[in-house]
Amino acid sequence: MTGQHTPRSLIVTFYGAYGRGGAGRPAGPVPIAALIRLLGAVGVDAPSVRSAVSRLKRRGLLVPDRTDAGAAGYALSEDARQLLDDGDRRIYGRPGAGHGTGQAAGGWLLAVFSVPEQERSKRHLLRSRLARLGFGTAAPGVWIAPDHLYEETRHTLARLELSSYVDLFRGAHAGFEPTAWSVRRWWDLDELATLHRAFLDAREPVLERWTGGGAPESGTPDLGTPDPEDAYRDYVLALDSWRFLPYADPGLPTALLPRDWPGIRAAEVFAALHDRLYDAGAGYVREVLSATRA
Image (cartoon, rainbow, N blue to C red; front, side, top):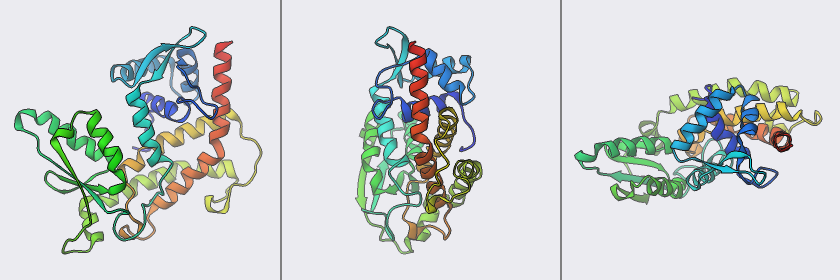
């Protein structure tokens, strides 16, 4: 999951990082010529960009528009903006190994659903979306997640018109076994640890190259201003790898996880790459947009 960069995923990653306006990011549609150049910097050829844009347009995530200068381009739909805003809270706003200790901070969120047999396709969609949100399976038709996923879960179910099939509950675990044991039944922690280690194998050497080997917790040495295109490339690839992990791993409390949980280190590495590379990457995006307009 963390090692494969598809054209469609990279386009979503680009828009999430640099295509929503503010802080030097383009506020309007991104010209297709600029998008081709920006995706070319991370290894995607022009035909693949056009094909992926077409698929994202059919899914309602990108909408065709024109820049102020009249160039053809693509902007995010409102649904796509909501998806990316929800994603920000996970990707940038949470520690890698969860919230608090013991119980999940604020308790647990239960999703209990029942879908008629004649609408079983919606049952499959419900299960897949809850899994993608990071829910674990407590029992057939009963899914569980840390309570901090409540708002995003509501947005997702409402957007997909699935809310009428689901009841949401908030509460504490009061079972007959320690919560840490139950968590191992609800989630495949070994698989989650494997995903975190794969991210570290791919991205820790990148961080070492940019920081001269400085560890994230020790601060980032000043090695001068990063080359904008190199910073942009390494940041987008790191973000494209990282952004799936906070969905697979929903932010479980540290006390419920195995010792030496690799998610802690993975989050530190991504945060350090973000601090080191994001602003320089934004400079490259501005450079490409200016050259396209010219």
